[in-house]
Image 1: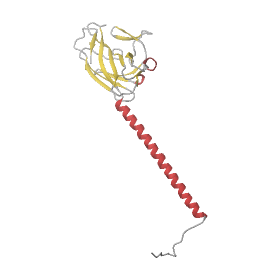
Image 2 (image 1 turned 90 degrees about the vertical axis):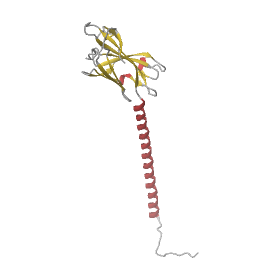
Image 3 (image 1 turned 180 degrees about the vertical axis):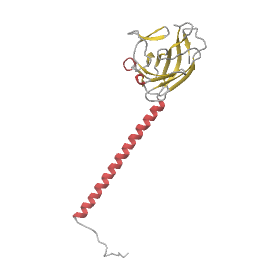
Length: 216
């Protein structure tokens, strides 16, 4: 085969050409590094977003039972003074810090939002009092006590609910301003910091002739 040379085509040689070639390699390397770093950051962000989404879907409480203690301080107008809610974690839920949980309650007339408070309590006349001071449980708070603390047993120090634990949430409905007379409609939501709120609706029984009533 015959080679044809085009005398008009010339190649560049010298230090200047070498510098330009090296500069092109450096630019390409920098661009590749930026692309790799960007891809890594996007991967990290995607993983974090996925973890948060899973946490929001899988985290939450399940309500086992709701009961009430009747306040008979006014015999002609009995009402539910204390609400007791037994809860555990839904299947697959990570641990939940009770100190970050809110409870929303409404009786159709008043809506209240309660924060957790770490206090020991006693019950008197269908209401809740603080064991240390004898004062009523505040109208903006609820408390809780552990009924079953499965390993790792961290309720006493951290107030954290883990899988297998059963906790009783205690609400002073009277102090919160709720008038839970017979046949009152009540709705509640238990809202963790992350995850799915737990919703329940129930009606106070038509007659309150016993000290304790099942609500849900």
